[in-house]
Length: 433
Image (cartoon, rainbow, N blue to C red; front, top):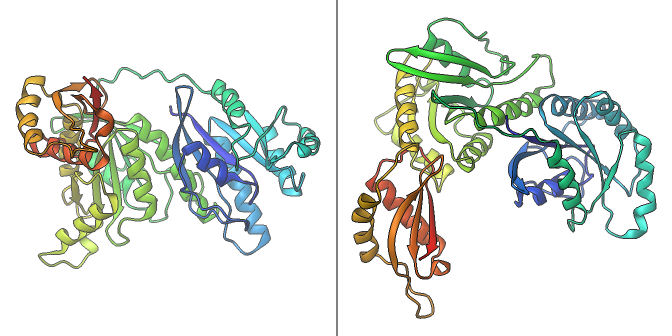
């Protein structure tokens, strides 16, 4: 299973700033007002060769103080259940608040490793104030400044010691994960494939609790289906359904070879879908996009083309992804989803001989060499495919440092034009000859 690090705490203690630092992005919006983080943010991070997913649990928009605190409490509960390690963030400038106490109570009862992260120690004068947090009874405290980054290295050194070792299991059958926001029809498509109601399907979003592994072996197909989805009880605060399903999705996504991302034709592709898509791409998984509930859309002869263009625009630059339009309730094109997933699985595992690569790519490179920089010309001598979970190619040349981003994209597009890698992320490296 993947290692998930969840950052929990009351609003405005600096969770998003730490998240941005760990994932080296500026994705989470950072502001001095409490409760700015509305979307759930999750990104990939690495420390001393340990890869892990970071989740910023974020604040809430709710107006009523009680609902607001209930929502935070609930996020902490979900994080305790799903995460490998929990970072409990507190603010040295405000000391311990009632909400901190309450979160600490929940965490003390959990069996998960919890790190008390005392933030905003921007100068050493505040060190004495930090010791008050020992009284939370959660063990050692870690003083950091998520603004400047001081102290985060020592914290991560300790965090990675609690990770489970990732032993890739022997993969004999392809694994396909069906992911997407709640209520897009993930369980329904599985029931349609298997031909019986294996999962409970209700029109209420978030009724599937665990990710379920199903062995599918009919019509000449043999693979494992991972049905994610993700909630415990429908009575939970609405916003947390998303958070819970995100946790589930990340775990399933890391196990899978091909990610079948289902989106709702009525609602279109939303930021959460794009997040999941890029996470699958970063993890080098094959991707198929399935637009479900297509029967509910009024169509003319251009509808599909327009819809596809909108999707490709939003998932750029990795747009070489198959898109299948289905209606699970009408049993339209359900088996096609599996055919396409099988094709993507093969594309992701495709090996191209060195001779074929050079024969096809060298003439293209000769016609369109990398632009010269400061009078220096890059000469590419030969190309080979490197062993990896998804297609990776090394281009050996004299001056790899002079090859810029647009040329990487040009080469990737040419590889895709000449060899079928639809749905599979392709990596291109320029190496010193």
